[in-house]
Image (cartoon, rainbow, N blue to C red):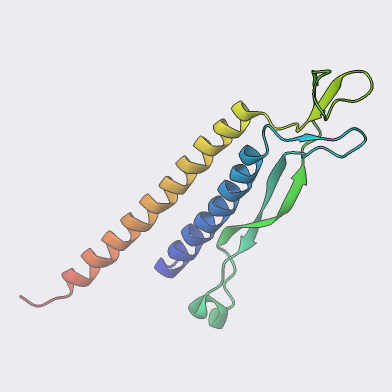
Length: 144
């Protein structure tokens, strides 16, 4: 694995976690959304990751695809049922008096946000350490 691979791998992880945090933000923005009777409520989205070969200018010329990064291949809707709340006075209530809301769990989204934030921070730490190693290697070649 070359130094350039480390930067490409960590960079792909940063991009993936950035996308994940954007989806989490969208889910949290819709946590309290409701729909009219017969309407389709907001469904929480989850990001799907996949391992992706990392190739740079160096590795393409040598045919090396041994390094893998992470890529967002899409999102899927949560299968959790929508929330039902009894509120017969609401203009969004159905004939039985129930209001249908999103299936977003604020607690689950906050746990996912913490996990994503920690993963992002770990990738930044890897980039910082790789940069530090590169700087030390360059300084070792300097003539004093």
